[in-house]
Amino acid sequence: MTKKSLLSFMKYVSLSILGMIAVSGYILADTFFVSAGLGTEGLTALSLALPAYNLVYGVSLMLGVGAATRFAYHKSQGETAEANSVFTHALAIGGIFAAALVIVALTLSAPLARLLGADEHVFDMTNTYLKVLILFSPAFVLKELLLCFVRNDGAPKLSMAAMVISSFSNILLDYLFIFPCNMGIFGAVLATGLSPIIGIAVLSFHFIRRKNTFRLIKTAPKFSVCGKIMSIGVPSLITQFSAGISMIVFNLLILNLAGNVGTAAYSVVANISFVVVSVFTGIEQGMQPLLSSAYGSGDEAMLREYLRYGVVTVFLVTALLTVALYIPTEQIVSVFNRERNVELAAYAVRGMRLYFSATVCVGLSSAVSVFFSSTQKPFPAQIISLLRGLAVLLPVVLIFSRLFGMTGIWLSYPVTETLVCIVAIVFLFVFYRPSKSVKE
Image (cartoon, rainbow, N blue to C red; front, side, top):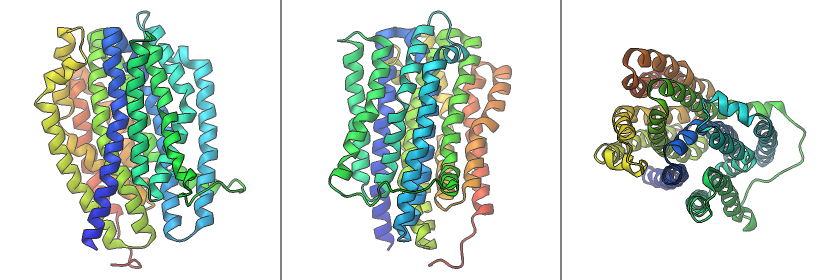
């Protein structure tokens, strides 16, 4: 059983990590091509607009993770009708959220750009990126929902393929739209917006080949189903929403301390951070189907085993990330500094080395959070997500920036993640009580 569970864990987690690395790759591609084609001002606009992506992605993850977790639970219980009801309700909720986001894009993108700190030099680019990105929110929501369901439906390879193909398509389109077509920031965001549509096309093969065990059904709206989906998925939304709010605050503080150059440097660090977080999100998403299935079938020993595998994986991945980020830091920054701006390089190099000093804590908190979500205990997962964003990070960055300037801003993230990791480990001992009715 141990060998079988290890192989299942390695399969799901490795494919999920590869897929998430591909997803984060197109964010890095945006950063690279925008820096090469539009310089420091383009990087600043991208940094200011990026919180919108966190919001759209957070809504998508909330529905995908929450609904797929419930789907996996019902599937393990043999409850086909309930599983299909979850999928149907998730699509309906996604449609409502997507419609609301489209309305925001059409009516409020300009005020949002100003609110995010865009000045006259970068306003047009920021506004364009915001509007077009949010207009594509229905595609982002549907893609993430299908990704999570297909992965939980026993097809992790197809989910990974969809993420990789859509991401590499985005990179190719980034290059074509920004350089040969000379479309500027609009080209960058158009490439990003088309990416999930390509991913949906790949995922459609799950239905074309009739491999799916879930489908749309006629059902009356059930608020209890909606509530369970959203309560389980809320930690993912909180994490992404908090990241977006934190990015806004970081941008405003850095604009005051170091101007547009400092904000451009933060854009480099934030986008690399997105890659790091995506790796741990890959571990989360790979663990989730396995944990949900073990919980649904009442296998307590398997639950603990998958959690142990997750913790070990976090430490191994952290070691690799540390080598990858700390040895070639200057070279990494230079890739996104095509103007060879000395001030930008100095900010970004120091920022990276401080910002990622508690990477292992990010992974451990994520593993504990997904364990709680997958075992139908959303409250501690919600608290962990809330603490690592709004509740701890914002007060820390406000205090540290006043006391230590830019150094304080870079240090606020690792300090926050260390504190949250301690809380997450305490929660694991407080809230996790093995059931006496499950198999050992």
